[in-house]
Image 1 (cartoon, rainbow, N blue to C red):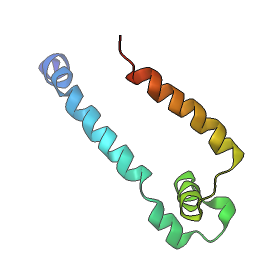
Image 2 (cartoon, helix red, strand yellow):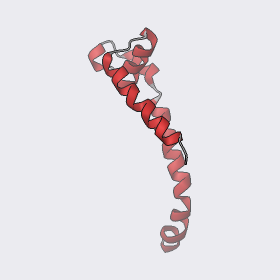
Image 3 (cartoon, helix red, strand yellow):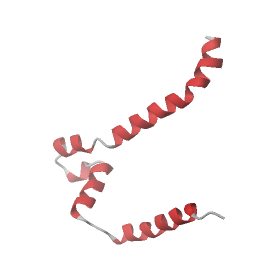
Image 4 (cartoon, helix red, strand yellow):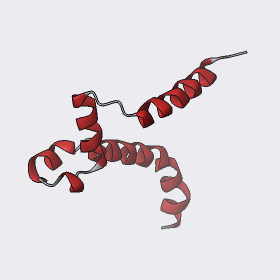
Length: 81
């Protein structure tokens, strides 16, 4: 057990992190089952609400407010020197 916890586990952390990330993204993208089974719009998960906003091309004022800060953050991260 000592060899496992001191050698194998630390060397396996990047692989475990990658598997966890892929599993999380895969679970996040499971909006289709919610679309099929949930009838009440108040119970929709966030993924389905965001999908409906994109499909309906809904752009509330809050989205424009957040988009400004997102664009600013992207530009700050891309400027070098």
